Structures are given as structure tokens and as C-alpha cells.
Length: 307
Image (cartoon, rainbow, N blue to C red):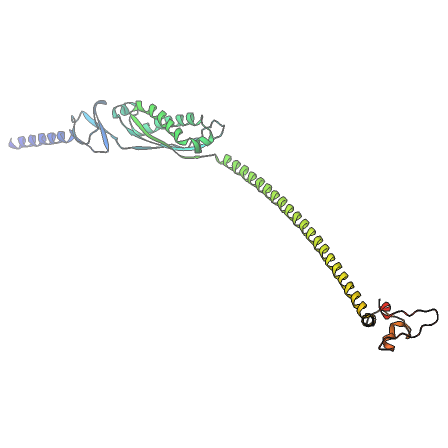
């Protein structure tokens, strides 16, 4: 009998211990919880700590209280200037109302699908009113703020707060990028051709100016040299005239010596002269005395023969 009471007591203690264990649950700082009774929400716990529930008939559903990430698959919206753009975006959100969240979407996977639908629709709508330059450069931050506000309004009824929406990458499709690259390459080649043509024109202009200046300089130099040469010849003739006036005999001798040097040097030219020619008078007489002339002839000076 005693053993029977001990067995019943042990069972009761075990049941009480199990009931106590099942009536306790813990909410950590990164979580929030809902207490459900046969699927009906009885209470919501958002503060961390040790909590209690009715065992056996109540259960606890936990939701993350931290900021969650949503990575969107790339989409290709059509912009206002009829250009297609490959946009890769992401969003950050948190569950602010676990009751609404449980009632409307129930779990994180379903919430991500709903948010992806909201985000894609908002991006196509907002980016469809913007141009290519606005998206990639000028008004990107404003466009992202508008998209975040629109998605936040749609996500609020399901207990979600959208914190941020960002475009990770915005590129042209591969075919468009290749076409733009070819067009840019053609434009750069055209610009290079124009620059080379302008450079060649400028070089030709410089060469023409240099040739003209060289021709002018050479002509002026020749003119100046002819002037100097003429002045020199005039001065030489003046000096010769003065020397002839001062000593005609020496001047005649000097001119004869020049004539001998020019006429008797080696070469292909031959001269046939009579030994009695006036040209050789200094050979016959060192003083250059002329032989008596034949009747009707006048002696010619050696200087005249040399010239």
C-alpha cells in the first residue's frame, strides 16, 4: 500500500514538474513572442525575460526583433526615356507589430515574398517616371527615398516597418552596353580624326609660313650680298684707277703678270700667239718696252692683251 502511494506521489510530482516546465518560456533580447491558445492570439511579449503561459493548451511563436535584410532579384524597368536598366536593389526592415505580422503573413518567408512584390511594383512605378541620368547620377537619393516611403506605406498593414531601400547596382543590359560602347568608340575615333586633321592643317600652315619666311630671308640675303659685292667691285675699280694714275708702268706690269698667270696655267685651252706679240713684251724686255710698230699698226699694251 505504501509503495502504491509512493508511486502515485512520484507521478504527481512528475506531472507538476512537467506542467511547471511547460508553463515557462524565455524571450531573449533579439526576439518577440506571441502566446497562442488553439491558434488564437492571447498576448504579445516584446520585452525580454522569463515568461509564463498555460501549459498544454498554449504555445509560443517567436519572431525576430532585429533588422532583417531583403535581397531583391534583379529587375529591368523601362525608364521615362525608353531605356531599359538592370536594377539590383535591397531593403532593410523590422517586425514592429507581431500580432498583425502573424495574422497577415504568418512567417518570414511569406513576408519576404510580399515585400518583394511591394518593392518591385514601387521601383517600376517610380523609376518609370525618371530618366537614365536621374537614376544613375542626379536624383538617385530622392528616388530611393520616394520608393522607401511607398513601400513603407504598403508594408505597415502587415506589421512591418521598412527602414531603408537602396539600389546596389544599376547597369544597362549587356546588349545596350555593347551598343553604347561601340557608339562611344565611333565618337572617339571621329574626334581623333578631326583632331588629327586640325593638327595637319595647322602643321601645313606653319610649314607654309616657314617656307615663305625662308624664301624672303634668302632673297633679302642675296640682295644684300649683291649690294655688298657691287660695292666691293666699285671699291676695287676705284683702287685700281687710283693705282694706275699713281704709277701707270707698275700697274701695267701688275696687270700683265695677272694675264700671264691666267693664260699660261695648265688646262685644255690652247692659245696660238706670235712670239712678237705685244702679250709677250715683258718676256722680251723686263721693262716692257714695246717694239716699233709696223706701219699702220699701233702698239697695244700688255694690260689690254691680258683683259
